Structures are given as C-alpha cells and as structure tokens.
Length: 115
Image (cartoon, rainbow, N blue to C red; front, side, top):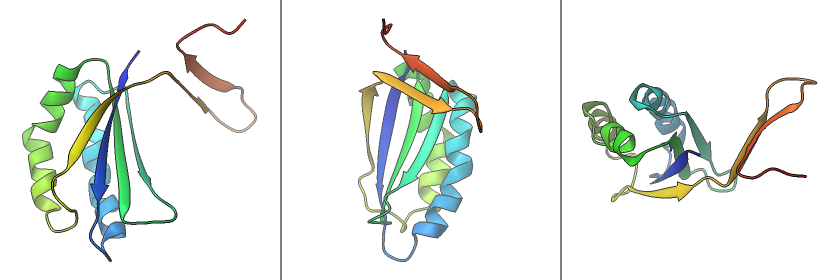
C-alpha cells in the first residue's frame, strides 16, 4: 500500500487563494515522479492552513519529487506566501476510498478484508 506524504503549508495572510492556485500544477506533477495520487486541502475554518498530500509507494520517488528542480522552483516562486520551515511527514495509509461518480458504488481500497 502507498504511503501518504503530508506537507503542511502555513500561509501568510491574504494570499491563500493565490497560493492554492499556484500550487495546483506542482502538486499534479507528483504523478510524473511515481505518485499514485495527490490531494490539496485548505482548512474551512482557517484558510491559512493548506495541506498537500502525495501518495507514493517508496520514499526514493518522493525524494526525487521533493528535491527536483520543479519543486525547488515551486518553493522559490511561492516564497513570501508561506512560513518556513516547510516540513513534511511520511505516513502509512491504513485505508482509503472514494465515490467514482453519481449513483455508482464506492471504490474502496482497504488494508484488510471485511467479512
């Protein structure tokens, strides 16, 4: 099962909309480095907290992405939009799922069978 890497971006005031729009293409490019998926969320109660998730099967692919020229460019371009340091955490995915469309059954990936 993939691991989830969480990057907590703590934003500076009045720039969260600009930040999330600029971050999107960089988050999407994680797929080119071996990610199985990605996600960006912004807290509803505090728009200055944005979390980026990327789902990788191995840490070396994550390292290639995070240390790439692409992500160095991202951090440089968005300097002043977020507080430093930017820290990430490597987490084990226990289960996940999603609904694939209106009226369709949920697509679920789980770490154990349910009987």
